[in-house]
Amino acid sequence: MSLDEKDFRRLVERLAEPVARRVMAENRDSYPMYKARNLLAAIDYQKHKDRTQVTDGKPVIRQMGVTPVKEVKEYDYLPDLMKGVYQKRLEDPSTQRTPSVVGEDDPRRLASTIRPTQPPPTAELVKRHQSRF
Image: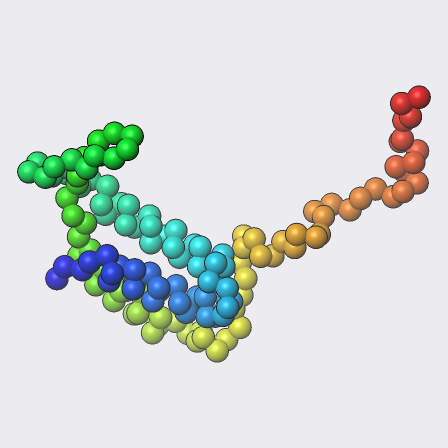
């Protein structure tokens, strides 16, 4: 079974949709969505990095040079990936109705207005102050 780019994009949306809906219904540029897209991009790269150059095709001439044409990507691994994802979701004891837990390394834990350390007291700042004059 051969899958095309449209099926791959559909899988990306399908995998990331529950995460986005669970964490941030309106914001599709959330951190979990970023992680899902990044993992899928890594899988895609690993599966297609060793494609050979097409010998009977003409090279693509671009503005800054010639780009060789590689074999067309094949997405034969996607059915197994989809099956594995759906199987994990079925076996997962927590459902989408449970509150999501934000991981320790999730950047959303850091508020942009909170300083990581407390500022020194004003009296200490005044004492350390050195005048230029």
